Amino acid sequence: ASQVLTKATGETTSITDLQFYKDTIAGLTASPKYLNSKYFYDAHGDKLFQDLMNCEEYYPTNCEMEIFTNQTADICEALIGNGDAFDLIELGAGDATKSTKLLKYLMDNKADFSYLPIDISENVISYLNMTLPVILPGIDITGLNGDYFDMLKKAADISDKRKVVMFLGSNIGNMPVADAEQFCNELRKHLSPGDMVLIGVDLKKNPATVLAAYNDKEGITKRFNLNLLERMNRELGATFDVNQFDHYAMYDPETGACKSYLISGAAQDVKIGEETISFAKDEYIYMEISQKYSVEQTDEMARKSGFKPSTHFSDSKDWFLDAIWQA
Ligand code: AVI
Image 1 (cartoon, rainbow, N blue to C red):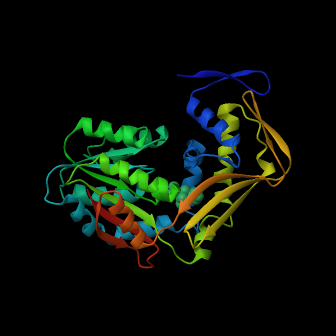
Image 2: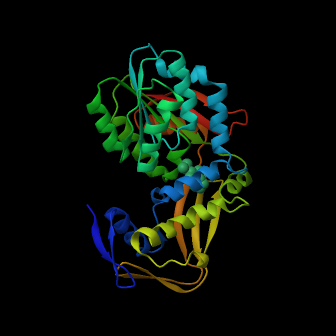
Image 3: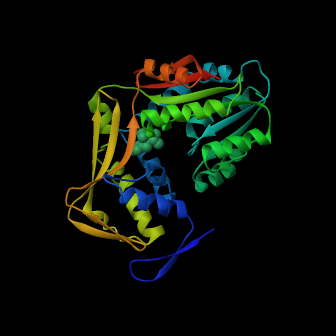
């Protein structure tokens, strides 16, 4: 349902995503200010994230791709298990480039599975529903657009087959550690014994390597962050001048937290609907966390949330881990 919002100019606009508006106002009226990185991914954000994945410094995609390319058979055989039919669910599927490697192997080897990608981006789901049957003729695909756990419930309603849940690309890293643990707990509650998870985690490594990935020379990460301000202008009628904000990334090797901020270049007021948000010069908006873990911390997180960590697959540099957890 859409709602009418009065813009700064006095005109009215209809906002389709009321939650986006509410979360934005909550974050920008808090002290310190923050925004939720899940809102990065509108159509422009999806495109910028694609560019990021192709940029030289952003290593996680290439590392996970190397794992899926060189260890396809081992990973897929672990997922297939005893050969009974299963639902292969992917949380935050994106363009599914990496999972396509696995899907192709599963199809070529006549595995009995249905693919259920889940994504909060409507664009992503319609893209996958359209393109995957062309790339992989005969694939049984049901794209689900919405919140991960709502859609997991829906997947359980659709079939009672064994569930294999993929959560790749270090998406778990976009939650602070405590939230990630809670998320894994919740995930375990939605699964049954015999089900499994394939989770991609970015590992702790040379701090300079991590920082460069979130502070690329071309400035794609900066544009990716600024796009959220532009999205507010587009969808909420906000009045951000994005030239007045700069990107700042930092990595703390002790905690493994890589964080991104936008810094206000001047004292300025920004209108969003009927609210006026004041920024001091140099004030920051906390935008995103990309948490890095050790292999031991990953196993520990599995155990804490009721999973049994089993197989580890990593790349040749040991920068990234894809782990299988048994429910
Ligand atoms: C989607 N997610 C795992 C990315 C990451 O590495 O945290 C998002 C991203 N943010 C900046 N660069 C990439």
